Length: 436
Image (tube, rainbow, N blue to C red):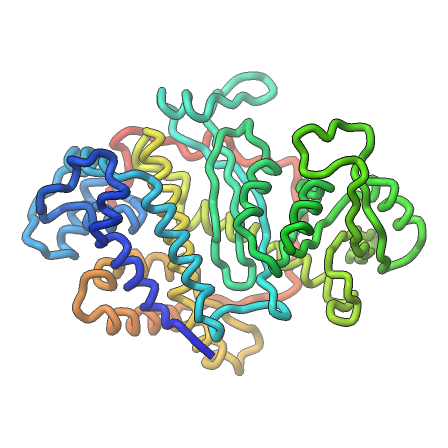
């Protein structure tokens, strides 16, 4: 069985941002980065990969102290001019390279459910700085009283819930629906994957697309989703094989199927602690290989993408942008995706060590996500450029294992649907970021 150590992905990242081919590919102009400067493409990329949390000049000074390449001064203005020369796609493709390489020749590290990757797709929104470029690209959003105008972007993530890897992330106008973005991301799933989807995504078109591509699905749906689901709900059965057809009172122009299309699915009635029942639709038809008892826990694993958004927004801080142009926003959005994946990968070995070290305690323990991110940011330069990168990795793992939090099972909190997230948070001001 093959296994890649966490430091392999640091080396892969370093090779990616140091490659002359990639420098030529991702510079905005052929004349950019043609001179041999001490603060060039690689240094700029590495600086942004740390994710910028403080005042830019403070971050720059820390970075210069860490890299120690005889550059004693680098102004915020010089950094802004330099980052304009880098295409945001560089960070997107770096994240894709890391995510793709994770699944190759890495069987000992990749967690699967009966040989399948367990993926989830979910959408959210993030607040963007208000500037002419963001207004033109993403548009204004208003509340029901058409006051307090804000710029909001739609986010969609394709996420591996067992390995905590963000395979893909999209940022688009708020007017673009979550389902439309999910359809694009389904093209990145592979034959044999299992995609878990909430009821907002359940549609005949999505299920037909996945079924045709050999992708399995588990979809939650309303009882009133179709006549078939209503009849199944009334039947009193917990598990049944049915044939679904598309709704007939619609146009099929531009679709990959017509009114005669059909798919064979398995419907399951899953009881909840409240006494209610949920209806799940799945393509996993074999009741022996995939028993009914597995599906409640399988669908619940979709919750991992909800907790991912919590880390993405509140720990990684994706909404705290250091620039107001669309180019800078995309750069930092993709950097946040990359950092979330590196955090997941670099803590994997430490998580196994923590299970052994704290196995005698009443609760299971996991690595503290907030502190591990802080440790990685502080030592990222040492990992990438230091001669003792592997030693730095070992020291990091020791820090991870020391800083853990208990996993308290079966915790449940009442959902307060009348409390909406503040749409004006966080407010961004030019050159007004944390100094300490």
